[in-house]
Length: 158
Image (spheres, rainbow, N blue to C red):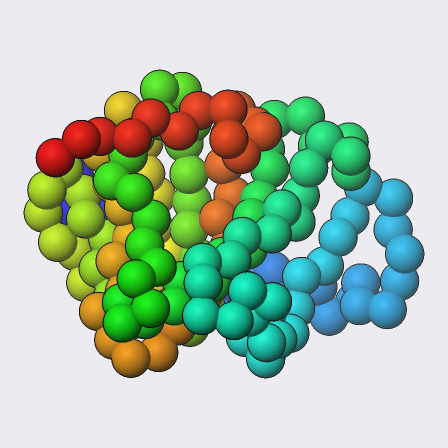
Protein backbone atom coordinates (compact mmCIF):
# COMPACT_ATOMS: atom_id res chain seq x y z
CA UNK A 1 0.00 0.00 0.00
CA UNK A 2 2.81 2.41 0.89
CA UNK A 3 4.46 1.78 -2.46
CA UNK A 4 1.17 2.80 -4.09
CA UNK A 5 1.30 6.10 -2.23
CA UNK A 6 4.85 6.67 -3.45
CA UNK A 7 3.99 5.62 -7.03
CA UNK A 8 1.30 8.28 -7.09
CA UNK A 9 4.13 10.80 -6.47
CA UNK A 10 5.78 9.71 -9.71
CA UNK A 11 2.45 9.88 -11.52
CA UNK A 12 1.98 13.41 -10.14
CA UNK A 13 5.32 14.50 -11.60
CA UNK A 14 4.36 13.06 -14.99
CA UNK A 15 0.96 14.79 -14.73
CA UNK A 16 2.66 18.12 -14.01
CA UNK A 17 5.06 17.70 -16.95
CA UNK A 18 2.14 17.03 -19.28
CA UNK A 19 -0.13 19.69 -17.77
CA UNK A 20 2.28 22.64 -17.58
CA UNK A 21 2.27 23.39 -21.34
CA UNK A 22 -1.57 23.40 -21.37
CA UNK A 23 -1.77 25.56 -18.26
CA UNK A 24 0.71 28.05 -19.69
CA UNK A 25 -1.60 28.56 -22.67
CA UNK A 26 -4.63 29.09 -20.43
CA UNK A 27 -3.08 31.57 -17.98
CA UNK A 28 -4.74 34.95 -18.00
CA UNK A 29 -7.88 33.66 -19.75
CA UNK A 30 -11.33 33.15 -18.35
CA UNK A 31 -12.50 29.75 -19.47
CA UNK A 32 -15.85 28.18 -18.59
CA UNK A 33 -15.44 25.19 -16.28
CA UNK A 34 -11.77 25.86 -15.68
CA UNK A 35 -9.75 27.25 -12.79
CA UNK A 36 -5.98 27.68 -12.59
CA UNK A 37 -4.34 27.46 -9.15
CA UNK A 38 -0.94 29.06 -8.66
CA UNK A 39 0.66 27.05 -5.87
CA UNK A 40 3.33 29.73 -5.50
CA UNK A 41 0.59 32.11 -4.33
CA UNK A 42 -0.49 29.51 -1.76
CA UNK A 43 3.11 29.20 -0.58
CA UNK A 44 3.60 32.99 -0.27
CA UNK A 45 0.32 33.91 1.43
CA UNK A 46 0.31 34.67 5.15
CA UNK A 47 -1.64 32.25 7.31
CA UNK A 48 -4.95 34.06 7.99
CA UNK A 49 -5.19 32.15 11.30
CA UNK A 50 -1.64 33.07 12.39
CA UNK A 51 -0.32 29.99 14.24
CA UNK A 52 -3.49 27.92 13.92
CA UNK A 53 -4.69 25.32 11.44
CA UNK A 54 -6.13 26.90 8.29
CA UNK A 55 -8.36 25.33 5.65
CA UNK A 56 -9.93 27.06 2.65
CA UNK A 57 -12.32 25.39 0.22
CA UNK A 58 -11.01 26.12 -3.28
CA UNK A 59 -13.24 23.87 -5.40
CA UNK A 60 -16.88 23.55 -4.32
CA UNK A 61 -20.37 22.93 -5.59
CA UNK A 62 -20.65 26.73 -5.97
CA UNK A 63 -18.30 26.30 -8.93
CA UNK A 64 -20.59 23.56 -10.27
CA UNK A 65 -18.20 20.82 -9.13
CA UNK A 66 -20.35 17.73 -8.68
CA UNK A 67 -18.00 14.85 -7.91
CA UNK A 68 -14.84 16.41 -6.54
CA UNK A 69 -13.96 19.28 -4.22
CA UNK A 70 -10.63 20.70 -3.08
CA UNK A 71 -9.16 22.43 -0.07
CA UNK A 72 -5.96 24.35 0.59
CA UNK A 73 -4.50 23.62 4.03
CA UNK A 74 -1.84 25.19 6.24
CA UNK A 75 -0.64 23.01 9.13
CA UNK A 76 1.60 25.02 11.49
CA UNK A 77 4.54 23.47 13.38
CA UNK A 78 3.74 21.14 16.28
CA UNK A 79 4.88 23.76 18.81
CA UNK A 80 1.60 25.61 18.09
CA UNK A 81 -0.51 22.61 19.08
CA UNK A 82 -2.15 22.52 15.63
CA UNK A 83 -2.88 19.07 14.25
CA UNK A 84 -5.32 17.08 12.17
CA UNK A 85 -7.24 14.36 14.04
CA UNK A 86 -6.50 10.73 13.14
CA UNK A 87 -9.47 9.78 10.95
CA UNK A 88 -10.86 7.95 7.97
CA UNK A 89 -13.51 8.52 5.34
CA UNK A 90 -16.27 6.02 4.62
CA UNK A 91 -16.63 6.95 0.94
CA UNK A 92 -14.11 9.68 0.16
CA UNK A 93 -10.91 9.13 -1.80
CA UNK A 94 -8.28 11.85 -1.56
CA UNK A 95 -5.25 13.09 -3.45
CA UNK A 96 -2.95 15.43 -1.52
CA UNK A 97 -0.30 17.52 -3.24
CA UNK A 98 2.30 18.71 -0.71
CA UNK A 99 3.43 22.16 -1.84
CA UNK A 100 5.74 23.08 1.06
CA UNK A 101 7.16 21.61 4.24
CA UNK A 102 8.01 18.16 5.56
CA UNK A 103 6.34 15.72 7.88
CA UNK A 104 4.68 12.33 7.98
CA UNK A 105 1.44 10.87 6.74
CA UNK A 106 0.35 8.37 9.37
CA UNK A 107 -1.35 5.54 7.45
CA UNK A 108 -2.95 2.77 9.51
CA UNK A 109 -0.50 3.56 12.31
CA UNK A 110 2.65 3.60 10.16
CA UNK A 111 4.66 6.78 9.45
CA UNK A 112 5.36 7.60 5.81
CA UNK A 113 7.75 10.56 5.36
CA UNK A 114 6.39 13.32 3.10
CA UNK A 115 7.90 16.48 1.61
CA UNK A 116 7.12 19.28 -0.83
CA UNK A 117 6.43 17.87 -4.29
CA UNK A 118 4.98 14.57 -3.03
CA UNK A 119 1.52 13.48 -4.16
CA UNK A 120 -0.43 11.12 -1.89
CA UNK A 121 -3.46 8.99 -2.75
CA UNK A 122 -5.63 7.75 0.11
CA UNK A 123 -8.45 5.26 -0.40
CA UNK A 124 -11.73 5.36 1.51
CA UNK A 125 -11.60 3.41 4.78
CA UNK A 126 -7.88 3.99 5.43
CA UNK A 127 -7.05 5.51 8.84
CA UNK A 128 -4.74 8.48 8.35
CA UNK A 129 -3.56 11.90 9.41
CA UNK A 130 -0.86 14.32 8.41
CA UNK A 131 1.79 15.19 10.98
CA UNK A 132 4.11 18.18 10.92
CA UNK A 133 7.47 17.29 12.46
CA UNK A 134 9.37 20.46 11.64
CA UNK A 135 9.54 24.08 12.74
CA UNK A 136 7.92 25.26 9.48
CA UNK A 137 4.38 24.97 8.13
CA UNK A 138 3.20 22.18 5.87
CA UNK A 139 1.01 23.45 3.05
CA UNK A 140 -0.96 21.20 0.77
CA UNK A 141 -3.86 21.03 -1.64
CA UNK A 142 -6.27 18.14 -1.27
CA UNK A 143 -8.68 17.02 -3.98
CA UNK A 144 -11.36 14.60 -2.82
CA UNK A 145 -14.46 12.78 -3.94
CA UNK A 146 -17.83 12.75 -2.18
CA UNK A 147 -18.00 16.40 -1.11
CA UNK A 148 -18.61 18.52 0.87
CA UNK A 149 -15.47 18.62 3.01
CA UNK A 150 -17.07 17.89 6.40
CA UNK A 151 -19.56 15.28 5.22
CA UNK A 152 -17.34 12.20 5.52
CA UNK A 153 -14.81 12.70 8.36
CA UNK A 154 -14.80 10.00 11.03
CA UNK A 155 -12.34 10.53 13.88
CA UNK A 156 -10.51 7.44 15.14
CA UNK A 157 -9.99 7.35 18.89
CA UNK A 158 -6.57 6.03 19.81
